[in-house]
Length: 322
Image (cartoon, rainbow, N blue to C red):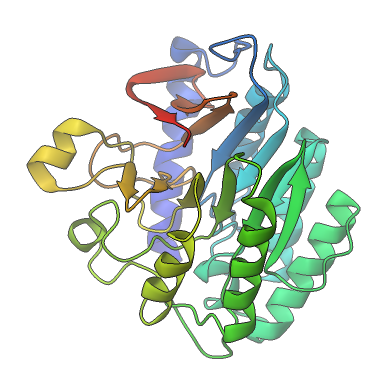
């Protein structure tokens, strides 16, 4: 914990000291690239809040304020896991308190390995149930499990998570969850709209995870099973975090084999940088994520630092819908 807190301290201290130079404290409302946007979504990952080090909650709040003040209203904020460092009740409370204070709109939230496998005060199942309770209270929902689906503005979001009782970094996804994914994609994938599958872990062979973090994918046999399900359908976007890859484009893909966006066998994969901690390869500091803008015939993926309020046009990707 001490080492992680040193890293966090450095990041927060840097933004506190130099933030005004980069617009951290100045409002800078952003808008969608085009006026005919159908769904406007902010996505971040790996916030790693820790009740023992509250400044990271402040750091998250700044980014949520950026989303809240957008000129083009943000329809949903998604967080793809590792909400906390250790999944303890106090840190989970702090995460949801921060969300509630700074974002009163729709939110899609997934659990990561640090929220399940690294828990210090609960069993895995107790951690999952506590998350479900807090998420339901926050969003006014009635989900029963930490994997679930929901619809926002007619678009389907499917959240996958770990079901094991003893895993640390690698999840177990049992047949019920795999069947659930298949059924939800079959139900929602017939109207030519994109469908978003959100999970903390990337799939094997995507984003160069074997370079950035060998064995950092979701693990077998689940990775192959999920890929086979996803590839049955069109316009699927699989959004993950976990490997702290940073923002990466063509240069790092050519030089090192790592990239934020991948397209494999018709499926679109987006891996998010760590919002709360340092990343490896590409851009390194926190506060970064993506703005996902859905239009009639395409989806635009726009890299943004939600803390310093600036875009990274080098990593923008336009995906034509099938």
